[in-house]
Length: 277
Image (tube, rainbow, N blue to C red; front, side):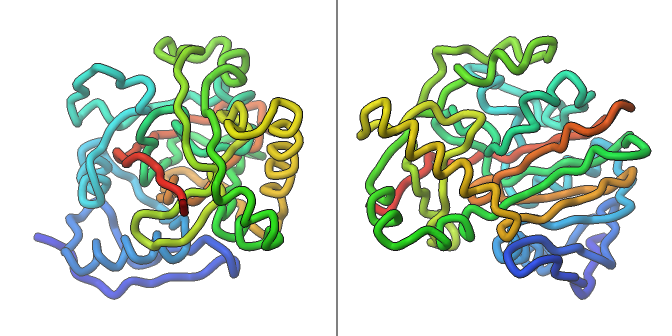
């Protein structure tokens, strides 16, 4: 029987982040709660749930209320993935060099993941936090002339910078020839807001600029994104779950831990990004 409850939200920063209280995700959620959670993730970018000791089936049921679960889109090319395999267990140490770079997941594919979740299984006693940053806030903080310029630009996203960082990680389907072009500024398909859509892990170059100009503009944007005013930082405890909008946020896994960290990852299919022009 679906659980109906009043949603408890504790806002974390003016720009993004809210802690959700009063929900046990082991129980089926009623339609009203699902609708309120969807609006909350659109409003706050990332939601955090404490003490969610979920089975894989319960995790999958929760995610399926918000879209179609998938694995990393670049690993699922030309594959049909059964739903029960879309919850991925990740021992994070092999990925640490790549995830300690600000990024949007899977932006090198035609339709990057829309909503995402991470659930902590095992966390180090010290360190291992994850940061998120609002790309709405990053875009809004740029000067009007710069916004006017980048609104009409597109950028190539590829794995050429990422593959050298993934040595020892199990991403055999990640190929250097995977490339897709997306707008530098993405219009969110649900909110209509503009968000920066370039990231240091996957973005290779701006199409309309020469190599030197592209490097300078991207360097400016990558540095701009790191402003703490756009960010929230989460200290993991076992069974925490973070649920966020991959279309307008970037995240960064702080590589400051020595003990192993084990996470469960889940993604929902997205659509092709479009820009303001």
